[in-house]
Length: 102
Image (cartoon, rainbow, N blue to C red; front, side, top):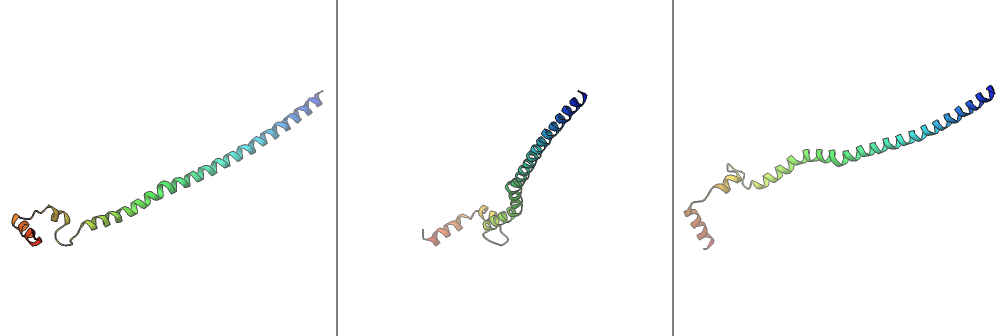
């Protein structure tokens, strides 16, 4: 009976090892799938968030420069804000109205 028990135990051990090996293969496939998902998630985050952020950092100064340069109508000693703030005298206003035909 002793040899019979050993043989049954050995078959049982072989079966358990086979079951564990199948489980390890399934775990490996699952881990690889998770790794690929994480890789593509990282790439998507890079494309969606990081690259536009870099673009804004590079392009925003150029956009602001273009916008502000379009506000500067005259390139002289006077800036656009000084031109708008300065009020003409009453005499200059009347002369401008007369020149326009009013």
